[in-house]
Amino acid sequence: MRKVWFVGAGPGDPELITVKGQRLLQRAGAILYAGSLVSEACTNWAPPSCEVADSKGMTLAEITAWLISRAKRHDTVIRLQTGDPSLYGALIEMVQPLDAAGIASEVVPGVSSAFAAAAAACESLTLPEVTQTVILTRVAGRTPMPAGESLPELAAHKSTLCLFLSITLLSKVCASLLEAGWQPNDPVLVVQKASWPNEEKVVRGTIATIRDICRAEKIASQAMIIVSPALGAREWERLSRSKLYDAAFTHRFRRGGR
Ligand code: SAH
Image (cartoon, rainbow, N blue to C red; front, top):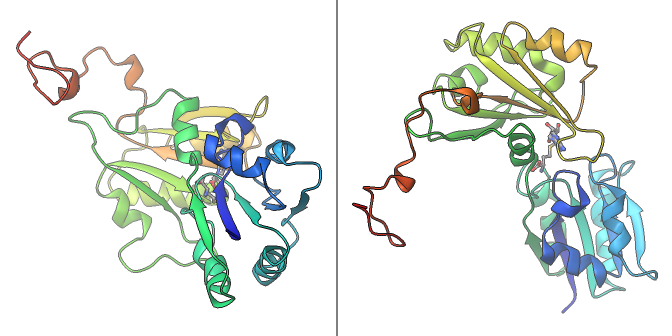
């Protein structure tokens, strides 16, 4: 059936697309990819006859017009999105015009950059008795934050925070964390171009130092900021073990008490 697929390309490494996403690319008639953040290498799986375009210079209206016109000519049209399409990807703004035009669409999830950043630094975003919650958010830029979602409010939970689209506002991020009660020497992780072969940069600092470190490393775009009480746990001597692997804990796949 004729369809526009919104496919999560993953965070950058072409190998981090899903098998399903890759298979769809192999039979695509037309692909529109977000060139600023999606590796062009992903489009190498497309058949030679496939029309491939970069949406970098397009407005949202031009993107939807492109998808609608190609859906009239091809069975499989792909909008290749960075990371997972459900996060900061203007998914609904693109799906609504397709619905209005009577064109079917479907979403294929992808590996978000939040997870690629955690992987790059071998960090766990949750840790037993430290934090069991991850907040995926951003600070207000041109897009304002809805009521109750300002960073000082969210940071007050002291859970893990993954901050998208915020690297140019790092001073504001740090001021908000301090306002929420975090301490200047609390750790901060910044990963630029997580998973991109030969381009990934992982830097660690504290709320007090991270801004200067990022400036020195010239990190001003495509970066994930992670703040968490679990950061650096790999080096901790005393770790409260996850209950799931506790020898006394019984669950569906293993009887405890051994
Ligand atoms: N849907 C995407 C996010 C799009 S918003 C996802 O799930 O990852 C774009 C923001 O994502 C960037 O400003 C940056 O904060 C983050 N980002 C995207 N790719 C990244 C990468 N490879 N490494 C670090 N951050 C990345």
